[in-house]
Length: 485
Image 1 (tube, helix red, strand yellow):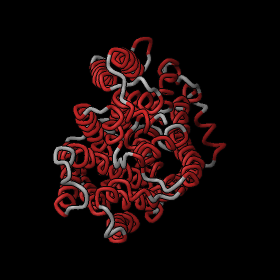
Image 2 (cartoon, one colour):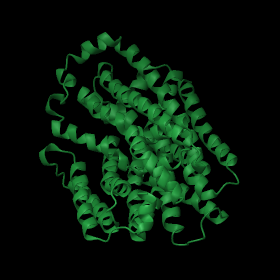
Image 3 (cartoon, one colour):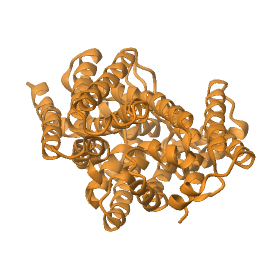
Image 4 (cartoon, helix red, strand yellow):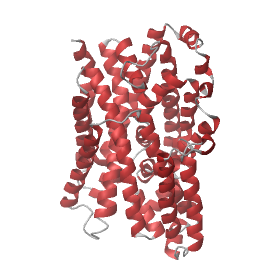
């Protein structure tokens, strides 16, 4: 009976998502399919833009993996998480308006459309699409693993059963709804996340005996109160996170594509305010919950990793109904991230590879519509298959994918929008070289001075981009008229 009350809000949430996506798809019927499916007809208002950006950026690592590491490493990991507060402001404030204006001029539907026009290279566009799909797949696998573990903990079923149910719901919701449906469900997911945080705070205070008692218990382990966690977090590592989770988030394609879909400047300005406040509350709030959970859960459950801390807090400290409401929050984080990445990955395959190889054959044809839906669903099933053998510690998978995307795309977008001399040779060298350098340094665990490998990827990409751009031909007048009027 207890499982029934836990599952009631969870099943209600999972059942509502495909229905909302279907409603959004029907509402948009009759508009140009490609533009509508991938960027919602450029009609997002400020609140929805903010919430879909929040939901895209926050993921299962924000609700499960990150707080679990905060439980283990203390307030130093909260400092790590606080860097992310600036991410939405940078994506919208620095990149938003210029990306939106140029995107409308060239009728860009994806960020790779912008790269293709800016650099005039089909080979670069195809490379961009392939890199994007690979790193998106890694992130989606992590979300599936987190969602499956949460669902299994709530329902008392096996990991495999939880994985299949969760993955099918997410894939169906995304395939049915497209960008508009994802934006609408993302908004609901963001609100569900805030509700989940509120319930978790209640669980924490109840289980820990109040904030004073919690802090007294934390004081028994002084390492948890120190910024470097007693030497377990080096200062160079923490400082390099300003690149990985702060400044370089301006190079994340899944966030930047939101700038192609908003309605007007007023919507952008409101979204900057709303998203910064909500991301701050989520990132700092959830990681503080992770630290404070040390006063309630004193050791990792047998056979588990720190990813089990938040689910254990929920199940062990709350009544069944409240446990169900609390689990909806991290489930919403998983679902919103996967749905956003699925849309971006399918757009890379269909719009940026398939349609570009068949000029004049894309657009609103029924064949394209069917292909997009099938590809979206197929990518979801592929990630499901990989997730049957779950990797450990979700947060590291997410951070790896973040770094890979930033090494590939950061300078391509920054220089593409703000440096006239940037050209195709520079972009190709920077993207390929930065990605290879980052991945090799991760595989070899090479971190000079304790810095995160993102420093290597970004630095290599910068040097190669500049050298290539100075050696290659400058862009033509057509490009300059659009990007530098």
